[in-house]
Image 1: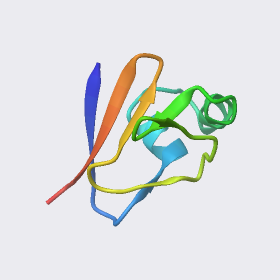
Image 2: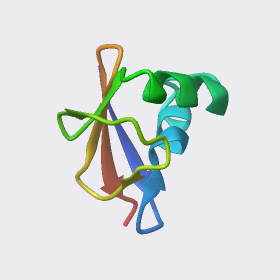
Image 3: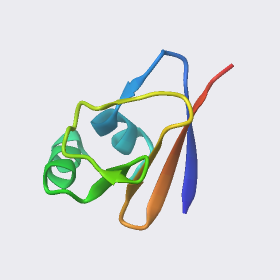
Length: 72
């Protein structure tokens, strides 16, 4: 599944993006999956839950892909 997430700010943190997209239920779950190496950002494994995602970045988790785009 590919999901687009529109943001108004310049960036969104990886853990927040995963939660907003519905890929994880809680911030704690996001922390766990990121720190265990289950999440890729722009095709590379990312262990930083606070990683800043900008417009056109992608995040992948459990067969799902999240695409960041600007709201306006």
